[in-house]
Amino acid sequence: MLPAQCRAGRALIEWTIDDLARASAVTAAVIADFETGRTPVEPASIDAIAAALEHGGVRFIPEGGGGAGVRLKFTRSEVARIATLENEGGIVAEDDV
Image 1 (cartoon, rainbow, N blue to C red):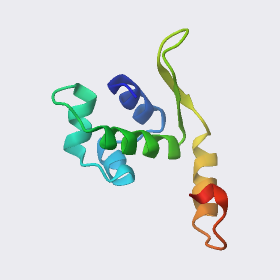
Image 2 (image 1 turned 135 degrees about the horizontal axis):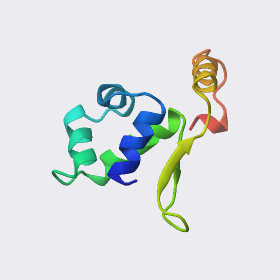
Image 3 (image 1 turned 30 degrees about the horizontal axis):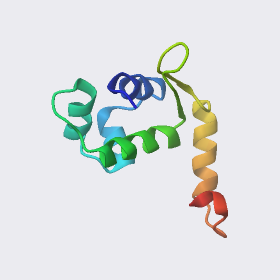
Image 4 (image 1 turned 180 degrees about the horizontal axis):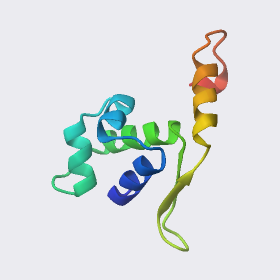
């Protein structure tokens, strides 16, 4: 994930840096550093940020072809419905890893 993809992904799902910090368990300062390129960020933090954005509905587009980018995986209402279903409890399935 590139810093620009992080910024664009947050914009697509209307998350602030604080929203992403809560979802990824990465501090807002580290996210800001990553997005601006001010200081190097640990790969594990970048992976956590990317995973949180993907869970929020962002799909990352690789650089091959037309260049790196992001798009919505789900609409905002679909993400809300999925979150509701995931929080209902029940038997843990293979897709919950």
